[in-house]
Image (cartoon, rainbow, N blue to C red; front, top):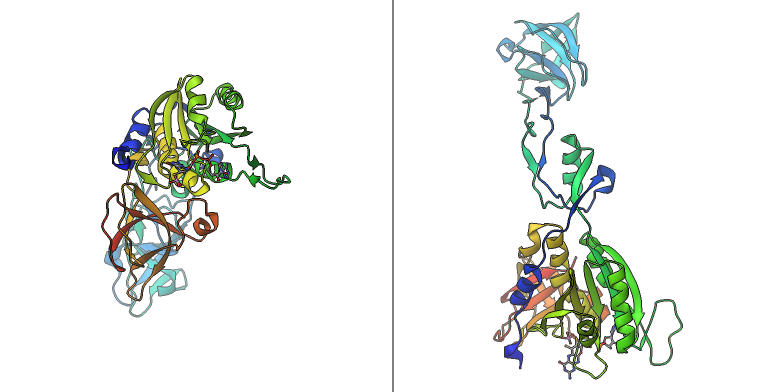
Length: 404
Ligand SMILES: Nc1nc2c(c(=O)[nH]1)N[C@H]1C(S)=C(S)[C@@H](COP(=O)(O)OP(=O)(O)OC[C@H]3O[C@@H](n4cnc5c(N)ncnc54)[C@H](O)[C@@H]3O)O[C@H]1N2
Ligand code: MOO
């Protein structure tokens, strides 16, 4: 019965409980995008290394700035080429953005506010010198941990790692995900399907989620609804040394739903089968040697929603990413009245919009059948309905998980 099914939260906790970080390796900066740091990254230098100007203009002593003052122009400091002598009272130097500020100078006069003639810098009417100076170490100082182990390397992180003078980064090994599709009705995209055949599409959605989460994909193809063929596929995943084996379809209770028996015959220890979730009830979780097994339901939307909720956090955890447990849902308002929910937490495909007051509104799609990819493609979020939730009127607060 539905009330005996494992909750989504308990199921996720169980999937993650055995997910230790895989080994570490190194990656050059240019190949590190999307990877996860295996160790804390310590700054190898201080940035900026000395005090530098934030503007193009003139470096001077703030105390010299009286109205109509004229300062003697004694030299220049450009980025990479400083002015070595200390600045004396009554002196100014030409300075450019990023150039070292000489000892004695404590203010920058913008060049737009300066009048330069006959070797002297005059201060325009109404102009004031700002500090416009970036102190040494303003960004980071040598020895500081600026990026913690478990950080996913995106745009800012890669630039920061480079600025800290790391050409090669310690990263978690990418989890290898083998994917097996099952079903006599399936043919690959591009093939000529027979009258009762359909195109195997789930592997593409699931592989995209896994790749986005940092995994390497080994798509083993389509296997028949036949124990021997499925066991052959599981053997191929073993040979591929998969860290995670994802199976698609054949997870439910029909006579041809053979994946669980095939996995068990190959040595899988079942952790759980069936959870209180819609779509995604017949989810299988287990271990086969060191490999994590996730058996996703065949309905296309169920396979994608289960991959987002279970495979993605599992892959993050295998790379030491602490966001694995983070709650990424957010609040919104229901765009339509919501019916009472039964015993499974429901992830309803929904469109997002903002109302006249700028509030986020999530409206469930009219059809929620878990085979409907067009509805999924037109949705921006999943609207989450807790198991046993009472009916809610339009405008009621709700939780959503963004799809993109
Ligand atoms: N009597 C019951 N029947 C069903 C139950 C139940 O509890 N009792 N659960 C339903 C739920 S919920 C789901 S979800 C499905 C999932 O079943 P399976 O995991 O066994 O999936 P299949 O039967 O193999 O396929 C379901 C559906 O999806 C299509 N499919 C399968 N693989 C792919 C693929 N790689 N690409 C595209 N489409 C795929 C398949 O052709 C079927 O149409 O079971 C319910 N039944
Ligand atoms: O997982 Mo099934 O899609 O709940 O219908």
